[in-house]
Image 1 (cartoon, rainbow, N blue to C red):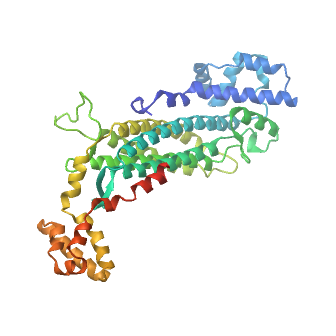
Image 2 (image 1 turned 120 degrees about the vertical axis):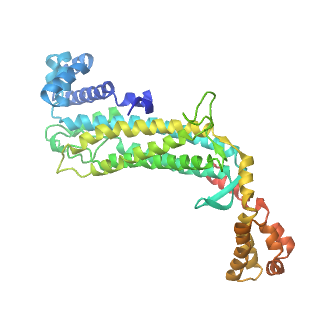
Image 3 (image 1 turned 60 degrees about the vertical axis):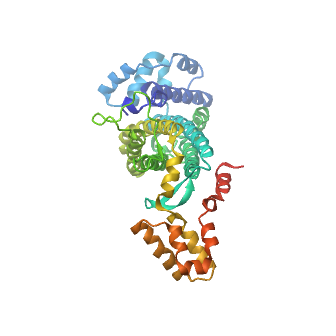
Length: 431
């Protein structure tokens, strides 16, 4: 990722220093287990543990010659350790180090993302409780439908993001596997105890059948989870973008002092954060396809997945980490205009109560077909002639005859649509 969209804490997970440090720990732990089994001398382990180190520039130089990153790493480590280095990597293959390390890094990244999600959830909850009773227009197909509250919109975001947190936690658990099983995963040259030992120390579970590589369905699940989270993020961003449109202006991004919206038009206040999140979501979702295609490898293993993961693992996690932090700030600082919400709700002169009138008519004995005809006939006068819906109904003898004037007026009570808001909030946030 480019620095513009990168947070240092997430970037460090994918830097060579962290990767090689994990490699070294995997190799050292394997030596400890091998010593317990009597495969290598016990006295070699403290030397490897104390002297074990690497030089990144030296690794790069060696790899330029040998064209193999793990061999280059092992050569650099051997230059620090000395003769005891011959006991490192006993019975292991490169994928044992690479795949186990990648799992550790993906777990580390997942922990950052889970912390991000918790921040977003907290911010959404605060704003949802703040606007639980802030009445606004509900829309379907972009058209006025029936009244809701802005808090209900936020509660919906919270419930969905909570599901995403559950998905992320599950993806973290399923990626937290290691493999120290040797060539083709048969343990022919290394005891399964070594895998058990290394995985326990690294906070992983042994992969049941690694075939030399950890099966990539685990990785596919992980990246698809990131994509689902990104899609929820975009759903929120698009709602904010719509609400910030000039002719709507029910909410808008915070416009800070000194901020400029356009190089040409000084009046502009654009939803740049939400638009950026839409773009980030497109980017993150794009990694689903290569992750899914990585599942199908040749026989016990090939490395067609390797180059893909070198891109997508850092880029997807860095992008989502940055985006969730941006989303958190957007929600926390969102400017809400309840007066505009109410003005927009009243814009259609009572049409939003059409379903209540329809139901009242059916309950009064009018067939649904006739009730629909009566309501739609009067509703079209509002659309086409700018009439007032309640006034038209009160002037319609058939409607008045079925309901009476008092019941018609009662059907225009806004509180009717909001009577179960507390129930929904209890479902989302508890008591």
